[in-house]
Length: 187
Ligand code: DGI
Ligand code: FE
Ligand code: FE
Ligand code: FE
Image 1 (cartoon, rainbow, N blue to C red):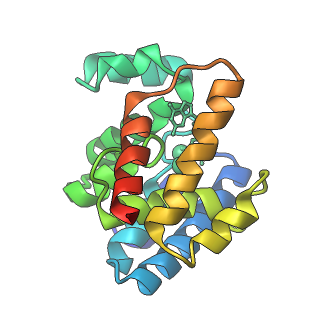
Image 2 (cartoon, rainbow, N blue to C red):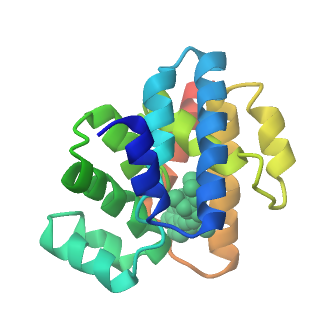
């Protein structure tokens, strides 16, 4: 399957608005890769596929997590986290994507993780700051993206954690680990 076919297959998984977001993440991820010496081809592929399963039914994702050996602890945290792991599984199962770097960038694009690769950082940050995003503080994150990947991502996870705390939600431990590790990398 070529890139055009993969694009069409991805587009079919989601409503138009999510597809627009995906295209924004693709452009932003390529730009970040060029700016920070990342692999632009992998950034494009991972960005294209990052929300592959975002619009899938909750039941479908839960079944995949249970039956395909994905981390069961995901089920104890916000459902917003599920599509990243399910998506990494799905693009491998449905489209034969085997590049572990790309799969990991998809898998950890929501939560982050300790020792994020440059590709992980690029995809995750592009997801936060693509042109269609409009949440309080996004312009500050766009400025920080010109300072450094770690500076911007640490701030992005910080604001996500703050919002989760304000809403009384649990925080997936990998997000805390990711932010701690990024702050260590800045110093
Ligand atoms: O899929 P997108 O909407 O493009 O963005 P995403 O995959 O980064 O999902 C972000 C959502 O996940 C955001 O609304 C916050 C929510 N979320 C829930 N629990 C956690 C979490 N995000 C992180 N990083 N960590 C959590 O524990
Ligand atoms: Fe996502
Ligand atoms: Fe994200
Ligand atoms: Fe996204």
